[in-house]
Length: 418
Image 1 (cartoon, rainbow, N blue to C red):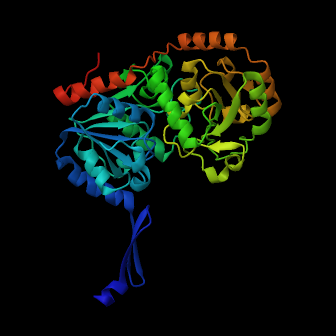
Image 2 (cartoon, one colour):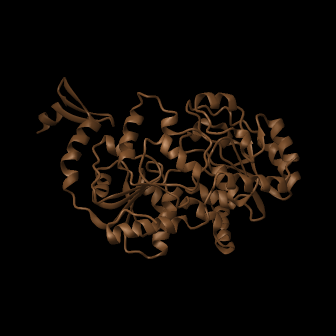
Image 3 (tube, rainbow, N blue to C red):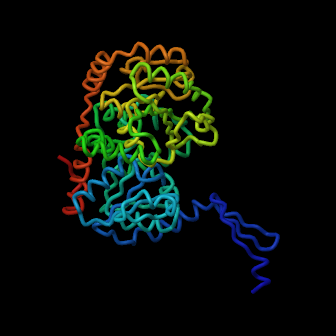
């Protein structure tokens, strides 16, 4: 046995499985092999009528639209088996309600849970699972919530290369989606155009935006939770800086002068302003010098950006869709974007940045001038007009609307929405 052990070994590199027999090596494509095997057994797994599998940003923590749908299910005390796919179960379990079962995102168990779930809820593509042989059955419901609203930056089919492997599997993903959730006529149009999707787009509103419509007591609880987690004094006002990612990984544009900007905000708006940063999930914090600035509070580990937004008084961003969420509270948003022309060339905008209600700065001096000249009443009027023009329908009822869809499917096996 010892000789055989020394001669024979198996190594999984993530992309390949390498079988070694002494000096001989056999390299097998992991996803193709796994996919072939999965397609053999998944169709025979029985669907459990009360199971729902959620995921958020391909294995991230408890947040975005998925969180707020799950919360509504728990609030209604519905008898569902709720499963959440995460990349690190031990690290993330402290963020989840005890009623939610956590399963490793890239595990065999994740495929088993998906194969037996009545409902899937995702805020990003399921491309990893399709490439590894996932099969969706006719008696399963796939709800795609996506992760933005009124977003200005182009997405999916409007930006991806024609030969992209991502494009290939995204088309498979779209063919399996039963509903995409929308909060506006803008969403309706661009999901149709950019998602290779011709199924129902349901104007439920975005569940993650329900947080902005909670009553004052609930809002205070969220604020207290955020302030406690970030160790911020109760009388402080949070300035939340949330820049988006660049496709080339560049973070040199995150060069905001924190000290001068915070000082100017204190003069303009009064109070003790605190500069807090939350980077996009696609950005590595190790590459961003801003995180190490002693005048910056690092909020990357806070799982739910919507709660950060709800607890903040101001937002600074460049092209992130979160500023269009934040505007629902009519609180000030400032755009700091040093690379507008390059970003428009590399990725592109759906509409001019100048058409938003937000004052735009391409350097630190302009940013300070925009703070000095900020007119709250004029800004609120621009926000209200923008929301009307885009026919935004968020009203705090989105999670209830989605749970209604789920409940009808689980109870009656009907894919239908009124």
